[in-house]
Length: 386
Image (cartoon, rainbow, N blue to C red; front, side, top):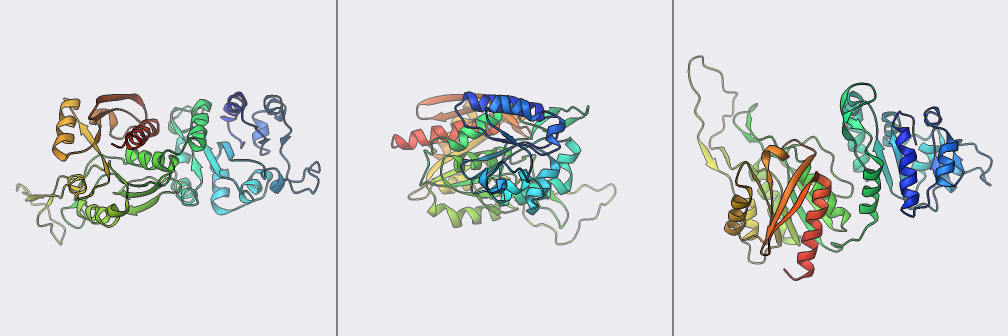
């Protein structure tokens, strides 16, 4: 635990983990003890709570090494902005940061901080660095904060953290499979400073990539321009235009077993983009000539020996009808359908899966939960030889 008002949630997290059968050992920073006492965590965990790098109760006085050697994972909840900065840069000036640096097990951070602190460019750089180091993240959530402001930075609720841990340690139905995912928007240049694009945040595609990795797959993520860190353990290929995404997919698709097309690829691009900035001419309209972009999903599904293909249909009306028609047209075994007005830019969505057996509503919830349900459905279809 690190210091922050969300420290009270850590008590409930310990209680839920103990109830689920986990063996929980608690270590706290000095700042954390200002918000909740070690006595509380000792009573809930049934074990000694550790706070001091120099605690003589460890026989060789190397608590920063010994305390984590029999652990399956270290979960920092709450994880403050200061602690994340330490972890990103390998600092180890107290027990908790030294434990993380000396660990042999996975590390999961559960961020909790003010929205401005979370969105600060320094924090986001640290998130990117930590994700690149395969550190796991649970949250943060969005909503009202203790400071009176609202936005991202709330600590994920304890039950949600337990769910993240269950997913991490759960069955690996896609072990040995290679999954290729496309995510985010594409940008089609009009001139050197202007583009045609859409409002896709990439969150659903990144959630699918993460869920596939959790399910044991080797995952490659081809991503358009987004402000998201690649999920831990996922290989990311950055692209900008639909044509670049198409070329990246062609390079990877022959080696994959499953292709999941989540990206909001632009249907059209400017036929002759200007090499110079187009100047505004008062009183004159501007006309752009557009040409069709390649249909990446249709191309993959039409290969002589295609991978198992999953499409996404983002519709504004007649969801099931339009999605079913798209699935039939592209000859897909499975399509996931959602309403754009519910999904774009949101942390939550609702999805209906459509296959040969009919419709399978996944309900509404966080995108990562829907992604896990989607991958479970894919694994079930593969197990049945579909």
